[in-house]
Amino acid sequence: DLFHAKSGEEALEALKQAIPDAIVMDLLLPGINGFETIQEIRKDEALKNVPIMIMSNLRKPSDIERATALGA
Image (cartoon, rainbow, N blue to C red; front, side):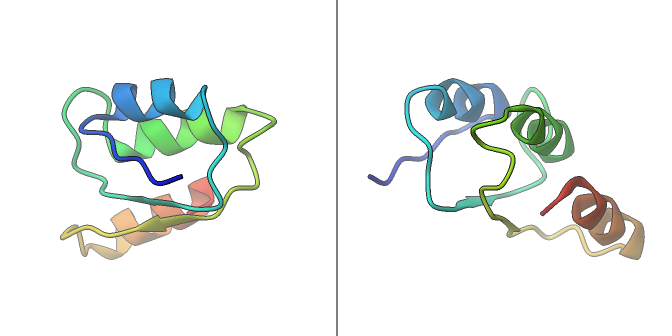
């Protein structure tokens, strides 16, 4: 099933209901940002290996390195 969320909090709530095959997300989110959302996803045993792909206009090497280090 396909679902979307408008915030990091909404995404984390939705992920409690179903484990997706993959996650596509932005880093600029209202509420908790994408980096924090990735951290929370990776803490969850059921979700820690779900692939995460970032689609964002953040292009600084430090942002890319941080997202990669978090497992995206």
